[in-house]
Image (cartoon, rainbow, N blue to C red; front, top):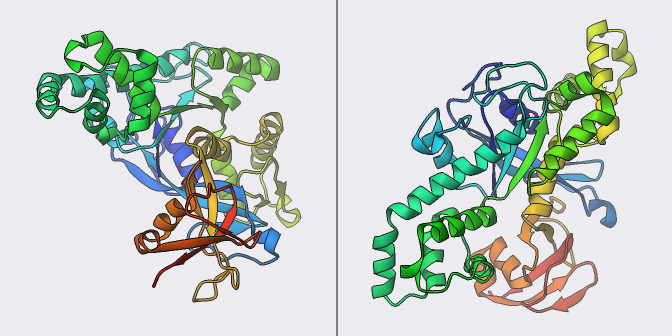
Amino acid sequence: MKIGVVGKPNVGKSTFFKASTLKEVDIQNFPFTTIETNVGAGYARIKCVCREVGKQCNPRTGFCTDGNRYIPIELVDVAGLVPGAHEGKGMGNQFLNDLIFCDALIHIVDVSGSANEKGEVVEVGSYNPVNDIKFLEEEIDLWLIGIVKKNWRKFVRTSHMQKEKGVEALTKQLSNINLKEKDTIDIYERLGFGDNLVTWTDDQISQFVIEARKKTKPIIIGANKIDKLLDKYGVEKTKEKLKELQSATESKVIPIFAEGELALRNAQKAGIVDYLYGNSDFEIKEDKINLLTPEQKQALNKIKSIMKIFDSTGVLSILNYAVFDKLDYICVYPAGTKTLCDKKGNVLPDVFLMKKGSTALDFAYKIHTDFGERFIRAVNVKTKQIIGKDYVLKDKDMIEIIADK
């Protein structure tokens, strides 16, 4: 799974990326800090089943702390986007080529309105962040529409000669953005344009591509720099502005304080605070309080107050929403009825993200192709029940696959 972190320059994309991954990236207060694409591991978080079985797990990837399992997700921090990117302006070509392989996009928006359309610093509240939401969607859509229309006649002629149905042809044509046939069928039925692609108008082609983008590149809005909004307007007016932003888009809006999360994770790394990534609160360690400067104490108190208002900094919340709500994944553990360990003695070393609706056979293939091809049956380790290949997986299932040798 790959999630793109997108947005115009100077809205806190790289800060969000670093807070999510703790990977060193260049963070500056001017446009186009991100020149090369940054790739790192962010994390989704679940309550681990290790507490249910009474044993501490030993993750092969990610980590588990206090019964919270952190599952690595590939994050891509791409170059800042400006109007005209689909024509190659700014870092447009690089941006758009990077996001084509992403399963979802987290659009970081400066909700305080302190960066104009080019990412230049302006007075707080002087720029409407709704403009950013609209222009990013438009740039991505225009870029994809341009690609499809460029080869449309040749594509239609070829599919007609090969006697392909419209659904099959379009799915194949847009496979590079990961469009699935079931999604094509859904769009077809909703738009009702008919199966004869030869008769489609430019507007119909554009409408189809936009709907395909919504299916394959769902966008979640990260309303960043919430601290600046609170400083200027206070709690109630800030919440009103967030509601206004949400009413202007179909995408989910989640308030985030990326700078605060980054400061917290650095403080945790330095042993200054007790903090579990994604929690709603933290504590300064008693033996460190007197070592902090008044400015540091003030900064930490500000972070704490914002976390109380929004229940966290929002950084992990938006990743969890992307993975489990927008992309519809669940977590499934490979395990055994006789042992929960691998050959090296690691307890529950793996947990796999599976699409809702996946079956035991899908899970077998996920673990290894040989298990899928030689599948005999599976066992629900929690219930000890034998299950068949068509068993629909549930979140936090522990499954043993039995395959022919």
